[in-house]
Image (cartoon, rainbow, N blue to C red; front, side):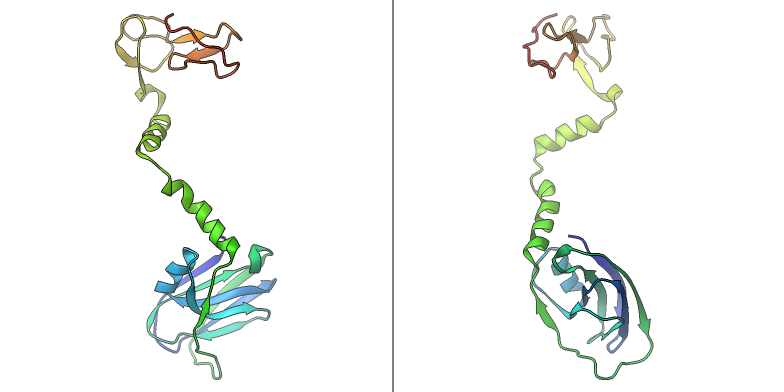
Length: 192
């Protein structure tokens, strides 16, 4: 989910927050820490503000809490430049009523896509990813001739046997771990 976030930290009741927009209309929310967590997970949340078509926007904190300002684009489209500042005076005639907002389907999908890889990670895929991320010299392979676990490279460090094989179909160099050629799909010989 794409949004602009300003962490205001702890603020007392009645602090005025001014947000300036330059560009399109945008959703501007002033919310406490608990509702910020809900917003980030595309759950229904309570906040001051909403769709703003004018600038500057002034809102007041309704209690002493950890406050956040969030700005996002309606339907995720458009661009807006933003800035904020805290004012040292209370603004008369500002609404202090919290409104319940429900995330759009686009926001829910964006959060689901962002969280999907983390949720579907299994122990096997984590292990495979760690092995791929490891430098080549730390990866080890069994030599087909002497059966010794050796460093990944062109030749066995024990007997000098080549650690790669040539595909008989397309003559591409293939790793010993491969059962089939990655280029043409030809079955590779079990023994060299």
